[in-house]
Amino acid sequence: MQIPVTVFTGFLGAGKTTIIINLLKQMPPDYKMVMLKNEFGNIEVDSKLVKDSNIKVTEMLNGCLCCILVGKLGNAINEILEKYSPDHILIETSGSAYPAPIAWEIQKMEDKLKLDGIITVIDAKNFEGYKDISYTAKLQAQYTSLILINKHEELSEKELDKVLDDVYELNPQTPKIKTDKGFVDADLIFGSNLKLPSIKSSSNIDKTHHHNEVDIMELITYESLNYEEFDSFIKSLSKWDFFRIKGLIRTDKGNFILNYSFGDFEFIKYNYEAESTQVTFMGKNFSFHFSKLKGKFGNNLTLINEIDEQDHK
Image (cartoon, rainbow, N blue to C red):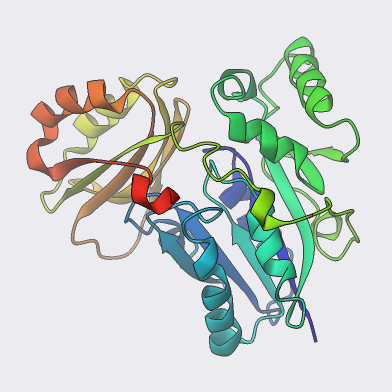
C-alpha cells in the first residue's frame, strides 16, 4: 500500500507550521501522521511546539532539503515508515526550498509512497516585500498543486487584490484558497486528487537558485534572560532584515517559544523544563547586524553560512 505524502512549502514565516497544526486537529485521534520537518540551523523548535499533539516530528537540520539533504530524504522516509508505520507523511520544507527535487525523490519511491499534493503557503501580508528578494518564493508559487493565501485578514481589499494579482501572474492555473487565520478544511488538502505539477527529471533542477537569499545566526546561552529586555530587543529589529526568528527562550518569567515573522511575533508559554535559550535568526545583512549584536550576546551568538559551498558541488 502506498503511503500518501503531502509537501508544504512557502517562504520563511508564511505560516506553514500553524496551518499544519490546525489540519492535525481535524484528523481522527487514531490516524497516524508523521511530519518530516526541514529547518536551517542546528536548533529543533517545532518538535517542541507540537509536543502536546498526537503527531510525531522528525527534524532534518542545518541545510536545505531540496539540495544537500535530498539524497538523505529516502533514508529519512524509510526510517519513518519502519519506526511509526504512518497513515500519512507531511513534509514541511525550509522557507527557501524549491519543492521539485523533493517531489522527484518521492516519486522515485512510488512502490511505498504516493505524492498526495504540494501545498504552497503565501504570506499575503508580506508577499510584496519578499517576492522581490526571493527567486525561490516565485518558484514555490509556480510549482504547486494548491496555493493557500494566509495572513490576509489585516489587508485592505485593495492591498489584497494587489497580492492576488501578483500570485495569479505567477500561476494563473493552480487553485487558490484563503485561510481563516491559518485554518483550512482538511478535506481540501488531503486525498482530494489535487493536480500535481509535471516532473521531468531531477537533473534539470537548478540547485543554486537561492543560496544567497538567507543569512543565519544562532543564539545559545545557558543564562536566564530578562524577559522585558529580550522583548524590547526583538521589537527593535528591522522586519525587512529579520525575516524569521524562532526558538526556545529561558527567562526570569518562565520558558517560552518565540515565533517571529517579519516584525510580528509572539511568546508561547512552554510548560516544560529548558536548560538553555536556543534561537535561530533568519534574514539578510547579518554580517552588519552580527557585529552589533555580538556586543550584546558575546560568544553566545554565532553567524553561520546557510549552506557551505562544497555542499553545492
